[in-house]
Amino acid sequence: MCGIFGIVSRKDINIGKIALEGIKRLEYRGYDSCGIVTQYDSKLFVKKDAGKIDVIHKKLKLDEFPNESKLALAHTRWATHGAPTKINSHPHLDCNDKIAVIHNGILENFIELREELLSKGHIFKSETDTEIIPHLIEDNLKTNGDLKIAVANAIKKCIGAYGLAICHADYPDTIIAVRRESPLIIGIEDGKTTYCASDIPAFLPYTNKCYILEDDEMAILKAGTVEFYDVNNISVPKQKEIQKIDWSIKAAEKGGYKHFMLKEIYEEPTALRQTMKISNDSLKDFAETLLSAERIYITAAGTSFYAALAGKFIITKFLGKYIQAIECSEFKIELENSLEENSIIIAISQSGETIDLIEAIRWAKESKQRVKVLSITNIVGSTITRHSDKVLITQAGPEIGVAATKTFVTQILAQSLVALEIAKLIRTESNDEIQKYYNALYSTPKVIENFLEKNIDLIKYIVRSLEKNLNFFFLARGISIATAKEGGLKLKEVACRFIEGYSAAHAKHGPISLVREGYPIIFIAPPDNTYERLIGNLMEFKSRGGKIISLVVKEDKKIADLSDITIRIPQPGDKYHTLFSPITFIPALQLLAYYAALEHNLDPDKPLNLAKTVTVH
Ligand code: M6R
Image (cartoon, rainbow, N blue to C red; front, side, top):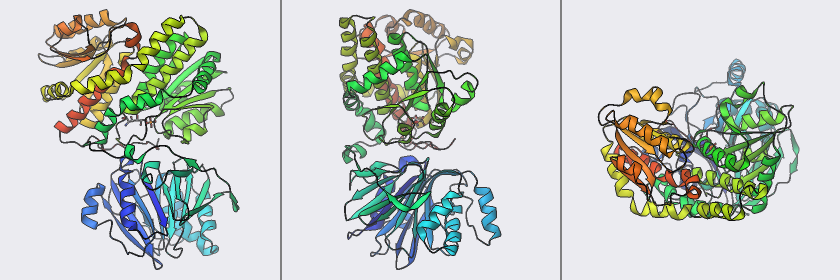
């Protein structure tokens, strides 16, 4: 939800070019408009407009700013307050064009603040909430001449979420960064250049050394140095620990693939292998906590929620306790009157920044009940980790495509590893049995590799054959409903098609009325204990003229024989491998969505109206 990039350097560099590349790497956070401000000779130089970055760059030459300029702020926007227009694009300036601000988040009390500032004579140009901030700083600077104090005072008046980067025309070597609820990371090349960004990949080509800004912390960035303060006590600098990120920049680049989405699907085997290295101690810790719980909830949003639905099945199988899955936006409403003592919440999020999820777990932790939060995320130091009692970090590497792909499979894997750890602790299965489940789980990367090697033409053929069908269903039962729902979400997101993942049994209670001769239905059909019943459901659709496409294991016969087209996942059909089928089956549906997007001339990396990290309610 909006990407922020800031740089202040003493190196001889083209600051505009680096700022441009920085927001290009953050474009997955929002792409309604963009802008860059640089500073030189007590002046600010601003270029901004509505549209995607490449288009604006062609028009405005975003890499051409005064050569002497060594400081820049750059922003890519996902519009909330105010339409995606040039005037609403960031940066926003004060009345005298001296203070520039870029913002990720939402100010809730902006109407009151705007009225107050208007009554003092401030002039606003945009409809945004962000524009309040430069004017508030301007106002504060009139009473005390110190930029740091003025920013702190301005911020204290704001209610809401913000990651902010601020510069002033008369402070040639200073960016002030401050955050609450929206992520902000400070990167540093010692003695040379300092960066701030909403996400690490933005500065990863230059440094992997960073500080993660916490709520209500302020960073004063100078070229190659940084100081930290508590917004509520800015007289004393505070110490922060530097972190080294072990992501390589290659992982955040397209590396020969046409789109990040495709690259990230192909990275799934590696992401799984890396995530298998999660330490046994943390898995055991998770498992023991779940065993001690009286009540367990699992919560997330979007793709992470569907990973949770699959994980819930796998964990429950060994734990033998019911796990209630609730979408994070509904969590508080559903449990307001029934959250019980000693409950555990499993919270899953790729970004670790989804605001509805953060709000849900914060609410639960602050309640009278003694609730613990176990979280699974891909981002070290993200907000969710600070609100969790225990954390598992998936090792998917940076995921840039807005549509989540490789993080989905790693989230299910992490939950599966916890499930098997539980199996080891409670010993209801023999060691030999548990080992067979491990072997099956460890084989998932190879299964995906084999699938990707041989099935692309088939997927493209299916996409072409579905060309005329604007809507259809993925149907499944049991654990595969999670796979079906995630497949449906991918097609909606990237191919703009209303394809719904649905329960095959439930479909006869309504959706079946859509079926006509040739209406396509894709059945997700691993050979688990729902298989025979699924055949019955399939027949209900087939006998009404439905065109059946099925996703089955390599040796499948019954469902394959009943299908018009069969996609075979190259894995055995035993109960061990079948349990983890959401991991091995999903790449087929992700690829279907990817090629359907291309068929419709859509950019799968930048779905309309979406942003990678959703930091608004
Ligand atoms: O970062 P999170 O996993 O918390 O994000 C949750 C959803 O916003 C996310 O999965 C979204 O649905 C993706 N666009 C799915 O591809």
